[in-house]
Image 1: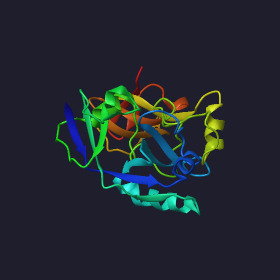
Image 2 (image 1 turned 45 degrees about the vertical axis):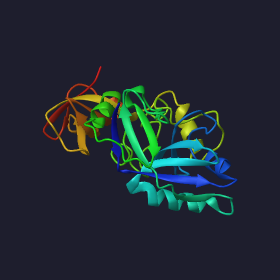
Image 3 (image 1 turned 180 degrees about the horizontal axis):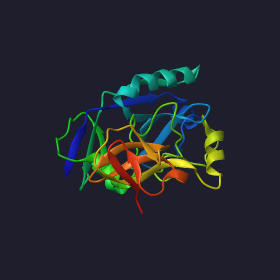
Image 4 (image 1 turned 90 degrees about the horizontal axis):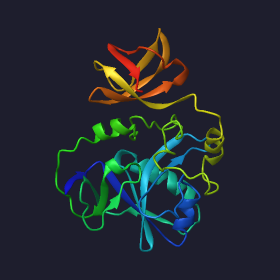
Length: 249
């Protein structure tokens, strides 16, 4: 077992008689799915606000979110709660992540098989040297606050369909109309993609093509990176500061 304690995560507990309906009406994925569920909460205009994992346990839900977004998410959920029978509180649990053989009670990360498992409990876990960024970059998996930017990112451009983070058959949720409209376009003109990089550039460096804006360079590992690109300009040799960028085959 190769595990790591994810100290930058907060696990909220959502309980009460209306908890399931409350969450189902808000988030991008379907709570009828089995196991760990990856989902997002959007603005009414269809832009990303928060991404998180949901897990049903007995008579409540665990919500696993990046710690620096937990307070804002709690505030947003409280705003939507109105008079519903819903209680939102800190569960006091921690998150352990790992690769290889999973311990009892662990659940598979639904975004990609190579992201291993997640375990919720009071044990801080065992420190391990796992380069999660390298795994993310290999599979073009965005991260909260890096490639996923509140009030800016559209989840389909960020690959949420490929990451099992959105369900187009579940019915209405906040921002659903815009997401559905983007789904039924012939093709996306912008989005996250894997690129090859020669040299280095800070996260957030603009990418240019013949001097014209072509995108933004994000997480890099082992000569490849995640980039947000305008696909009609992502041709030939691109530049990101002093680095040379090329769209991966």
